[in-house]
Length: 347
Image 1 (cartoon, one colour):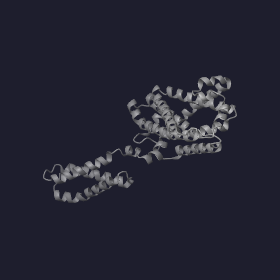
Image 2 (image 1 turned 60 degrees about the vertical axis):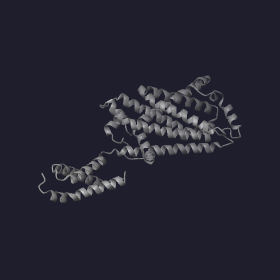
Image 3 (image 1 turned 45 degrees about the vertical axis):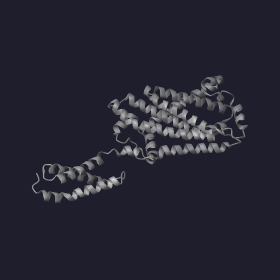
Image 4 (image 1 turned 135 degrees about the vertical axis):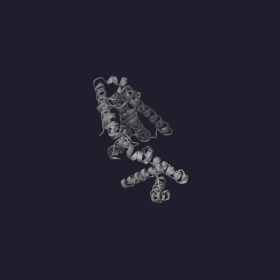
């Protein structure tokens, strides 16, 4: 109970003014980080002002001060409970430089599994072509891959003019749309508890292994590298990341070893799934542009050494980006470490 209202107001006014000043600064510099001491001071001022409001509410003769404190406490409450990390994730620079690579590393074991399954598919595809060459007509989806690789290389190298002129953009858009559709499918197939995702990755591996061995056996390894590396150094990892997203979804649905409900598990992984598939889409847009405007041109139009060097540089830069950018706390914002590891093991 307040005995002397004037004295109470005079005593507490400096704390109210300080809180108001901090709120004004925080609202004007939205997103600016606060130091630990500032956070502690803000919490103290908020708690003290809220207590003052409770005390002065019993004093009906001071409605102006009460309304002032109500507004002050409401503003402070809004600042404390605002979900700032949601806004941060929508910041393009922050998302590119930190959120996407952090999300990738947070589910690195799922990515390792996609690599293993794809490599097994590669080995199987190569074995099929090595033991039964006519089978490539069955397992390879495109007609231009069914013939003799040397004949195709000779045909490609005989072209000295810009054969893509006039329809590069259309071809690039078709590539992007197809690859993004396959990537979304790879993630969505996680709803089959990951079985569909693994089958899709295995089949992609079969195609890659069969084509690679076919060209290597024909002595066309330089053409193969010059053809696939410029866009494949981004496109293939993108498909693997899409598979990673599918396995993360599958793990959340299965919930093996987790004490959390399905709703809780999905709440934790949904932001990561969106981040992964958005990153994959951006990677495939780049790969589509490179394939249409660069990969489809061969010697003598473009030297293979240039194309191989370009693709190798892309691959190295992608590795550095995913492995090193955004180093720090790779846990999901707002999620406990226990729930993150319950989804897919961390790095």
